[in-house]
Length: 267
Image (tube, rainbow, N blue to C red; front, side, top):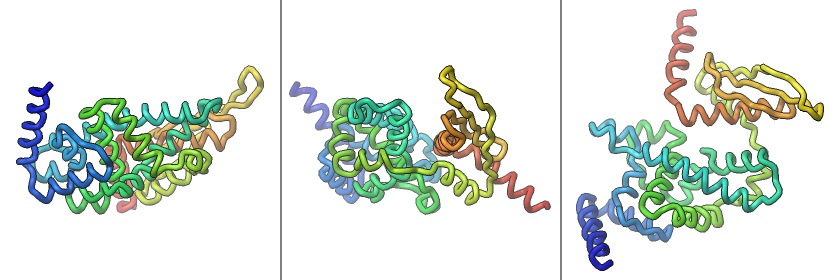
């Protein structure tokens, strides 16, 4: 046990030697404020490295995207567990919507700023000022880093005690109306991309309850499909899925936007 502790301490010392004193102070203050302590400080630091900075410095692998990918899945699992236990007897649709409201970018961005994560982001100036997802993405990367360094149980405890208990009112958020359709349309207007909602199927269940299936189209791309007991509900779910696609695969829509601008300029 003593040998393993010595190895960890030696690794910490080696890791700290690679950082400036200012960076060390920032990372240590961040850990102290949240009452988390990393064995591998490099993981914590990497969680705050945006791809734009890595590209500028010629190291495409030195960014937080892999940690973000992992953290997104871990956070989904933790929030699913918490919501399931908290809202006993609620149906699957309610639980899914509540989880979506908690892990949506708007919420995670606010959380990131609350815990002063934004002060640690390393990115190009352009990306920092133009990417509204950068803080929420870094928060997910932080969750991925905590999971790798400390394991799932520690990570879940951190989310429950340091984030949900202090910064997010689950009950208030669960019953807050979120208009995903309006958000998607606003995004389309900002990017000059046409947003359409197509009712592709209307049927009835065995109980004669009507079922509506809607597709949200982003330009020529099917962004998401929604199934609901009203046209409005199916559109909201389709828009919610489309927004998730935009978040997960933003490069899909860069070409669409450019093509639309080219077409408009030649009219």
